Amino acid sequence: MLSLDFTILNFIYEYCHTRFLDILMPLITDLGNAGFIWIVLTLMLFISKKYRKVGATMLIALMLDVTVCNVILKPLIARIRPCDINTSVHLLISRPTDYSFPSGHTAASFAAVSALYFSKRKFWIPAFFLAILIAFSRLYLYVHYPTDILAGALIGMIIGYIGWKMENLLVHHKNVYFLEKDRKKDIEGI
Image (cartoon, rainbow, N blue to C red; front, side):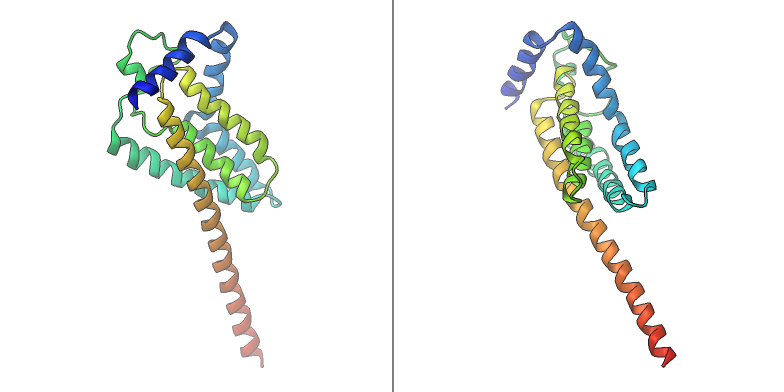
C-alpha cells in the first residue's frame, strides 16, 4: 500500500505542480489549519437563531473529530509523514510536527460537511467542494499519503453523522425534560 501511496504522491508532485497552484494550495490548506474555516462557520451558524441547531451539530462533530483523530488515532498509529521519508521534496509550507494518519484537515472538513449534509442544509454542497480542495492540498503539499486522506474523509463522515445523531438526542432529551416539567405543573395545578 505504501508503494501505491508514493506513486500517487510522486505523480502529483512531478506532474501537477504549477506556479499558480504553488501559491493557491498553501492558502487552501491554511483554511483547514486547526479546523479554522469550519470553526468560524460553526460559530456563525451557532450565533444565528435560525441555524443554531446545525451549528451545535457541527460543534459536536468537530469536538469528536479532534478527540478521535488528534488525541487517539495519530499518537496510537504514529505514522511518519511522507515528507519525512522522501526528504528530497521541496515543501511549500512548514513541516508538520505531528503524525500523518489520519489527515486531521480532511477529517475535520468532512465532519463539518457531513454535519451540514445530515442537518439537511444546502450549503453542504459548497462546503463539500472546499473539503475536497483542502484534502487535495494535503497531497499536493506532500504532507499526507492518499490513504491518510481517504481515512480522514471516512472518519470525518462517520463523525459528522454521529455528531448529528448526538445533537438530535440532546434536543430530544431536552424536549422530554421540559414536557415532563410542564406535565408536572399541569398536575399540580389541578
